[in-house]
Length: 121
Picture 1 (cartoon, rainbow, N blue to C red):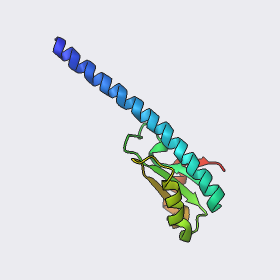
Picture 2: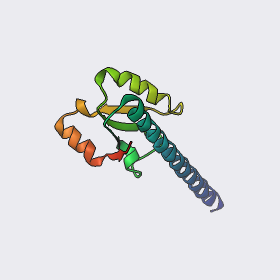
Picture 3: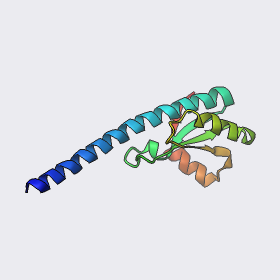
Picture 4: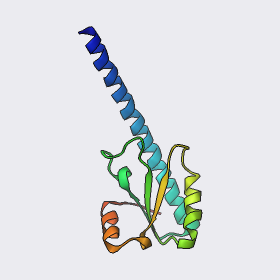
C-alpha cells in the first residue's frame, strides 16, 4: 500500500503544480491582452477590443491556450503591423490571434461578441 500511496501523492503534487502554473499563465496572458489592447487603442486607433476564446472561460483555459483578441476598426493594411507589435509583447512560448471584426460574417460576429469581454480604452 505504501507504493500506491506514494504514487497517488506524486500525481496529486503534479496536478497541484500544473494548476498553479496554469493560474500563473492565465494571469500573465490576461495582462498581456490588456497591454496589447492599450497599444491597439493608442497606436492603431481601433474602436474596440474584445477578449475572446479560452481566456474568457477559465475552465477551458490550459497551458497551450493562446490569446485571442477581436478588434473593431483595425484597417486591413495595418493588420500585419498590429499583429507584429502585439506579438512583441508576448513571452517566447505564447501566440496571439487578432481577429478583425470587419472580416467576419454576421453570425461569427454575434457569436464572438456574445462570448467576448470588452477591454476598455
